[in-house]
Image (cartoon, rainbow, N blue to C red; front, side):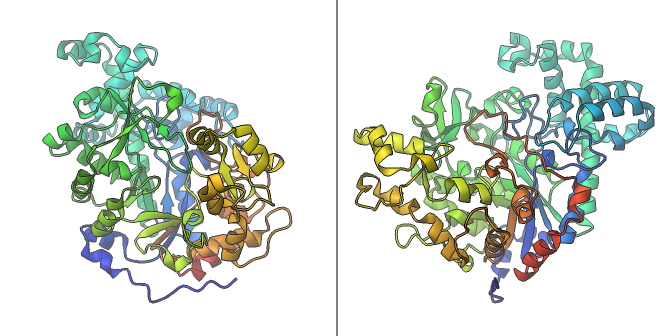
Length: 600
C-alpha cells in the first residue's frame, strides 16, 4: 500500500512558541521512534532485567530501522512495589537497572562467582520479569560497596554536592524504610515521621555507611545513564523520558516535603469511556500554592536532574497540570473515582493555572516537553499546549469523526504538533485491540448504564450482545442488532458497532479471514507513520508484530492493565535479545515504512 505524505507540511511555527529553544535543540524534522520499557528488553550481558547500557543496543536497532526516538517508561526507584508510576522518588533511578559489569572503580572479575549465580537464578528470555532480581543485585552491590577502593572519590563527592536538593533525603528515607521493615513513613515514630532534627541527626550518624551506599548507587546509575545518552546523541537518537505527574504517597518526596502535598486526598481520574468508574491512583495531589512560594523549586530540580539523561520528556497526565481529579481518603475503594471533584474547582481558573505551571517547566529545562493529553481533556488544554509549542498525543484508534460519520480520520488530519501513536503502554496492542476490543463496549459501563436507567442488565446483555464472542470484560454486539434495538445505548452503539469495518476501510484492505496477516499490521503502521504529526512513536511489540515473534495470545502481550493489581502488569519481556533483534529480517520492512513516511 502506497501512503503519500504531504511534503508541504511545515513545522516552522513551533519556533515562534515558548518552546522555541527546545525545538532548535531537537530539530524541526519528522521523526519516528519506539516506546520500550527498559525492563522489557535485555542483552547478552543483562542480569535478570534490562540495564542502562542496553539502551545503546536499542539505539543501534533504531539506526537499523530508520528511527531516532526512544521513549522509555519511568525509571525511578519504585522500592519493592514495581509500579513505575508509583515511585518512591521522582529523582532517584532504580538500582535494578544498574549494570554490575560496568561499575566505576570496581574490578568486577573479583565477583564472577556471585555474578554467575545471580544470572543463573534470574535468566533473561522468559515471558515475564522476575523482580526478585532487585534484592539479589542490592545484596551483591552492598558487598561490592564495602570492598570498594577510594578511587574516583572526587566525582562521587561532586555528585553528592550537586544533588543536595534530593539525594540526602532520599538516601535517609531508604535506610529508615529498611530499618522499619519497609513500612510507610506514616507508620514511623513521631521523630522520624515529622523529621525532628535531633532524631534525624542521630539516625544518620548510626547508619552513615548505609546512607552513603544509597548515594553511591545513585552516582553509579547517573554515570551509566549519562553514557547511554551520549551514545544516543552521538548517533542523532533522542531519548524521551517519562516523568510521572504524581509520586507515591510513600515516597522520599512526600516525606521530605509534606507541605507540598494534599495528604487528605487521593488523585485520580473521572469516569470516561475506558474506565466507567473512573480511577483512584492512591498518590496525593500537589499543594501548588505551597510549591509556588518557593518558585516551584521541587519541579525545577526534577527537570534539572532529568535533563542529564533525556532530550525530551513526556508529561504524564498533563491534564492534571490544569486541574486534577481528587477523591477523599474516606471514599470506599470500590467507588474508584466516582465521587471526586476537580482541583481547582472553578473551571475559569484552569487555563491560567496550567499555562503558569507549564511555562515554568519550559523555562527551566533544555528538554522539549511532550504531553500525554488523553482521557477527559479540558477545552483549554489543546489551546495552551499549542501556544507553548508542546506536542500532545494523537491515538490512531481514537482519531475518528465522532458524532458524524464515525469514520477513522486520515493521517493528514492529525495535529502537526503531536506524537502519533497506535497505542500507549496503558492500552492493548494493535493485534489485541482488533481481536478483543474493536467493535465492543466495556461491560462495566453497560452495567452502570443499566443501573442508571433502571434496566435489567442480564436481559439487556442476552438481547444485545454475543456472549460467545465477548471476552476480557468487553461485550460484542450481536451482528443482527441495529440502532433502534439498542436505543437505550444509541451513543455507544454508533461509536462501536461497525468499528472493525470502518477501520478496514481506513486501511483500504479486505477483512482478514482468521489470524491477522502482516499486511494488516503493516498498513496500520504505514498510516500512523504518514500522519501529519511531527513525531510518530510506536510500542516495540507493535513494531515487532510485523514478525511472528508474538504469535501467542495477543491479550498477554500488554505492558499494563490499568486499574488492576495483576501480576502481569509491568513485567512483559521481549522474546529475543537486543543483539538478535538488531538482525531480524523484519527490520528492513520497518525501515521502509519509516522512509516512506519521510521520517528518520
